[in-house]
Length: 245
Length: 317
View 1 (tube, each protein chain N blue to C red):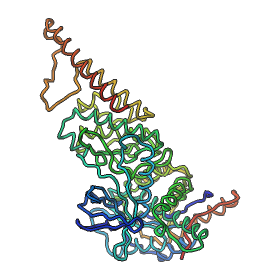
View 2 (view 1 turned 90 degrees about the horizontal axis):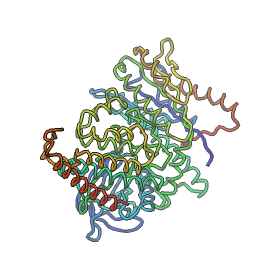
View 3 (view 1 turned 45 degrees about the vertical axis):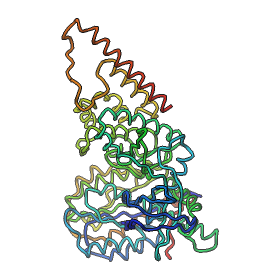
View 4 (view 1 turned 180 degrees about the vertical axis):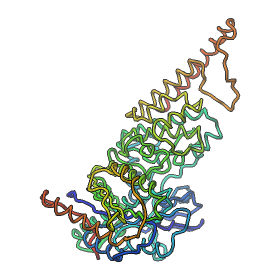
């Protein structure tokens, strides 16, 4: 199977958006363009309020991704698990589509005998290792995130370490919201590792509104910028995504 | 999180594809990836893993199948018996059935039998890992919780193969304390040295049962930890080599550990530390006339240990 690219937005937040477009609509928009939106809700000691929980789950559902609400302490493991699971989910979708084309009927892995499943999983695992992955990370830096930011930084460095062990190429980009002047601010443009974020992260001054919707919108645009440049440079640039059903 | 699979003892599970029936005896454990039950089939005890996620079951089955092909007389992991789905109400729960490995959890065993078992079990583990590595797999999520010591004879076995990874792929399942990436001491690429780092941490864990948090991290902290424990410090060279990824295969670490034990024995340090019976401070030059007697004792200990090591070598070769 040809090597393509899986595209994800990873949103790390601790609460409700309160400015700009509806983040659920923006997540749905991302999905339509083949970008999966995953959300991690970070809580510390305190309970997360119901509205925030609903928004977090809603964004992931609309964005075709996965959501997890976790305590700050286990953030590292969650970030890598969510990214991996979402990747598997996307690739599984791609494999299911191929199966559908071959067998000419709607079939999922659950319908196959355990013996056949093994072979399919082998293909999915192989793709997981070799596929290229673009992750755009969106970090909420509103005031309530202040204490959590050092852990977020550690978790992102750990994610970079985990994914660097794969055979496929990784590209990361990091945006924070709200930005200094704008709703969203780019901290790191597409790069193979996240190591560079260490220094920029410590300089962040959390505070302000939570424009989650505009942030997702900007993230989509950043993917598109990249696509046009890279599409121009490379002959084929395949993106894997599950077709919306 | 997916809901864990929760079924009561006495429940009868029948496979949809292969029609085998199993009676659930009790739950053995559960984690993020599913639950493991003790079950009975035709009067035989087996372990059954269930998960809501068919991918987890399928991946683990793939691993167990490759393990079975790779290993000799007694495999490191459990043998696989059956893979199937269980239709319960409107749900389908995928499961697989494997050998039930009965024994004592690793750290519990050492607590019961004494620290003299540490090098023995570590050597056993290294031999098993070597076989696995030769088959092109690393164990991945190596930690005491995944190790069980079976009896007659006492032997280390692994019970959870969820983290096993083919060479040069990336390790997806790990536990921070045993992961070299967490300590800033290497990548998460599947290669033998990844497992050997975990072996070193298991050995450290034997002497620090409560583990310890990451402070400065890296070599500095781990080296300090090793030096602060007198018994552990004896293995400093080997542990540091494993921690810094100097060993490229398990056999090498195994050989050096045996050599180290022999050397310690010949220096009269003694391998055994059975329940604090031994007098510690052997006065260096107390009485000259006793020299022959001491030499004799050292010689006897050396011979016994040599035979013991030869015995182990013979067992594991």
